[in-house]
Image (cartoon, rainbow, N blue to C red; front, side):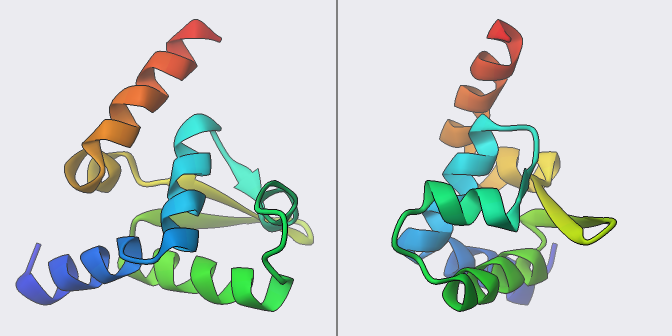
Length: 97
């Protein structure tokens, strides 16, 4: 991973709302934008869309279209590298299910 990509990743994680999105995705296998909006009470859909776009551009989350919905998941390799505390917690939660 080159320096520009690493900086982009850190910038993506440097915002409170984006970090909350990553935290939510570390606790769930995948979430659609509407569900993320419900969980992040008070974040307008246009703002959420902007945050999701930045996180996807950084490569930390992966969008997947299914019909009219877009589902988001964490990229496991990047999550383990850049937010290991969340990835470790996610592994614990997913094993317990």
